[in-house]
Image (cartoon, rainbow, N blue to C red; front, side, top):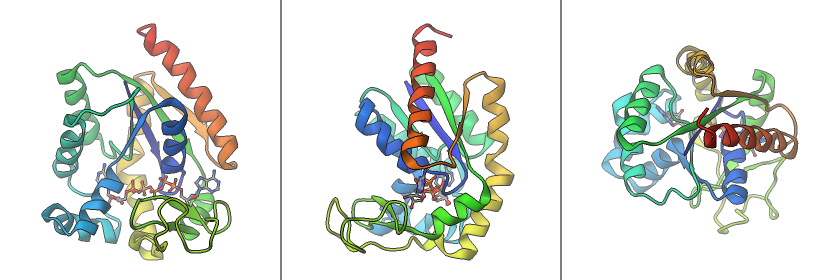
Length: 223
Ligand code: AP5
């Protein structure tokens, strides 16, 4: 079973996917995190995507689809896979439909996290990221136990290069132009769950869990 997290940069997709992973035994696959890992490793892929990611542009569809295909081919899909950050364009959604048909995977639900621009700007402005294990924090709402240090692995936290004000502006522009059409795309298919993502993490998570339970029942019933 496949789940998609859709939403603006900073809406909380990664944070909520991590919670679902822990509670439901899902595997979270973040294309953004896979690309950052490649950049940290300095691989060919990392060098190719660095400029796109740093300036806040989308990586070309075929390239990011190939990265996802390779990851899913490895198996290890737990009780279901959460796609955090894929698809992001209508073309990517079409590629995903081809992949689903080919492997007989079922797209169970699309969880659309809705938050205002003011909210996402506050979240991105205070985010700190672990360059070693990928964990995310927020200086006010989700601070680490020791300031500037990752709770999980002890590495020094950093600000993501694409959380610079100019890159945030670009990412939001790209989101409005290229990703928002997916809301209608999945709404028409009857699998979109709108979730108010403006509240506190626990509050949003409750709504996410309710949506997953709802969709899960429908999915099992073949609806
Ligand atoms: P990606 O890493 O996917 O970035 P994004 O979509 O911009 O999303 P973010 O990671 O910024 O935000 P999020 O919604 O996960 O929020 P988070 O939980 O961290 O992609 C990065 C780049 O990779 C793209 O720009 C592109 O270049 C490339 N890329 C990736 N996928 C691609 C694709 N499919 N096609 C082409 N290119 C692709 O939360 C944000 C902050 O808020 C955190 O500090 C968190 O602690 C805090 N927070 C979260 N929830 C709450 C809450 N409820 N209350 C208070 N604080 C909260």
